[in-house]
Image (tube, rainbow, N blue to C red; front, side):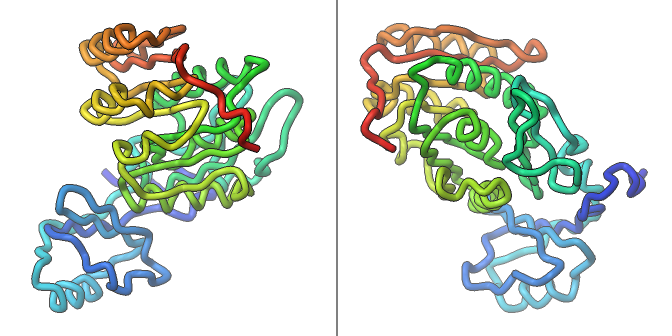
Length: 293
């Protein structure tokens, strides 16, 4: 049964009209119409999101691009696609809210709280998932230190929520990376909403290729296969601080063993919902990027 619109008062997205295609839409395709939300590409498939039915537009794209095949088309409530209702959350000192909650002003503060605006669009990551929550705890713990990180590398940034949190808590420069172009674009829009363009750069790229970027703090809430690879690199060992998440119990054990064998110290860890694990620690051989301002 379709959820009624009052589920998300004020939200500009009520329902999504999704076209599931086999193949990748040509890069020069003009998709940017008023009713177009975004194109989620993954593993050779494309999901085109619209705010209203666009069958004629999809037919035109299919006629022009024979490499594409329409697999399905369906309507879905916005909250159902995200798997949750985007709303204001409180995470330690951080208050994170969608832009349609008008009482929230970007970059403002109330007492000891820091306020952030987060529009997830159709990208997963509103801040409520347990891995995100535990990453936020870890980041805040790291920034409670007097000699906190100045430069952050956020791999698998999604909506950019963890990059925004690091910047709000004290990171001077953050590189936010996601392999998915729509995620990187969504993160960039959230950076703009929070007026942090001079502190955060969102880019599309692979974690394996960007792990060597200089940073004091590495945040990685990513697939285990990628994490298993990057934690064994010189680039990872050079990061003074790290927050690693998105791990199942058995995966966390393997990652912890690799970290310990390489000389890293695991300072804290969280288990969320009895499933997901987050590790926080530092590399004694890592070094702060003190010269970066």
